[in-house]
Length: 444
Image (cartoon, rainbow, N blue to C red; front, side, top):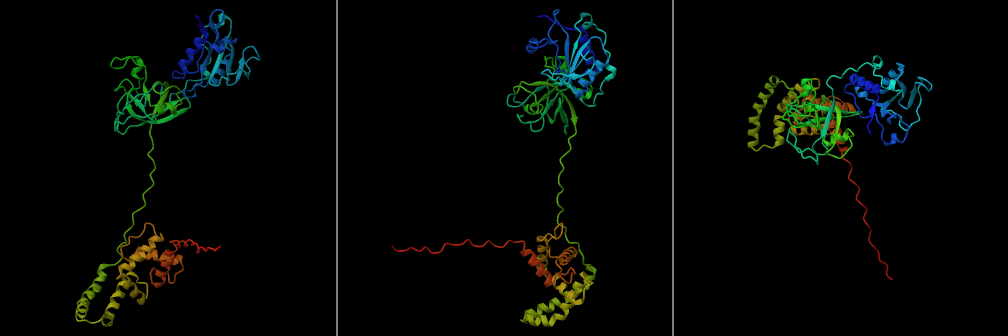
């Protein structure tokens, strides 16, 4: 059967195409299908084989709001209008003129609008321009958006393809990715692919389709393959981007894998790097708190009495005799060391602290307990030095556990309290399981 579209509708469609040059056309329609053929639809050719109805696709992504366009056409009161259907409503030029009413047909026309023109040949073939465009100004193109690009499928189990980048890995069915017809230098940008109300962000993993040196996005042109012949003379399918099977799936493109094609928009996007939690600071080494210049006299006294102690030990004197003999000198040295670190304390306490300073094993034990209790962050380095940081941590512990005096000095009371708190960290051993008693057998 030979049929044609009413000339007035051809003019309207051309005006819409000029106003929205990259609009989607997936729900455009003129002549009816078998379902329409069984009804009195205007999509069926009339006695002159002329179709007097047309559908125009809603495409909000590119600025074509089908309801607004339908309303603008109605507002023009053009005598060619018979009725318009949009979003579950119908508006007629003759029935309740120019007032929207509920539409009860099976298709609510929410993906397109429908327009039927008059059955009068003079009107339906009237080729005057339609007066509606002032009410629906042309949308401003979004910078950086490449619209209405034919996309074909590549890679996956039905099309063994290796990436042109990185490790040249085999592209899988579950890998998101696109291919563009020019090679990118590292680092490559990511691409957002848009299809209707769906979008997906993908890496660029290959070069193509068709050409390998057609950066149309940088040249402000359309894909060269849209000419129908690529740069080497091969006939093309006009595709300007390739999508992996997983990308086609994410956009909801139907059909068997390896055969799908569609029309998409795409743009470059900057993907933010993942936020990485900062690493904990490394343990801080105790700062040197002792003035070596002030310690020189103490060191000299130690050097003076050391040979005497060695000679006494070689002569066989007992340790108790040595302690009694050199006690005044040792107490003086220990008091000097303690006084340098804790000048605010009385002399007996300074002597005790000085003794602790001379025993790094004890100091390391205190530092270990402080770290187990997580009293300071970062933890102390267990180096046996009773410096300012160790003193501050001990003071913090004393204040938290009511140890008196709270002076930063780890005396017997403080070390005992530390030991008690560390012991609480270790759960008590489980009670042994009860054992069965002896089995008694009763004689018969």
